[in-house]
Length: 81
Image (tube, rainbow, N blue to C red; front, top):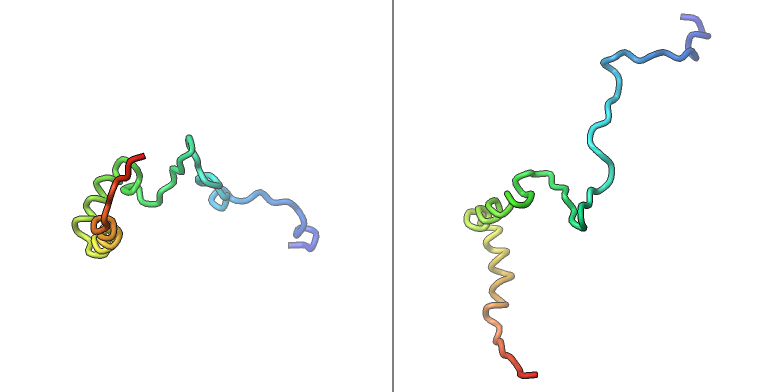
């Protein structure tokens, strides 16, 4: 290989070509972000997945309980306008 061959443009082999996969940026459709890594957590399948987590995962149940208990135990009253 001569020194002048170094600057010659070479066509890459077919197996080394880079191919674009996916898109860049955040997809927003009608004001809602539609990107989810786990397809089980994308609506509407997410309803069943979250319900299963609520029932079977202790950490999720504890988190939900810590949010719900202050709301349930608060004294609520309605004042007339």
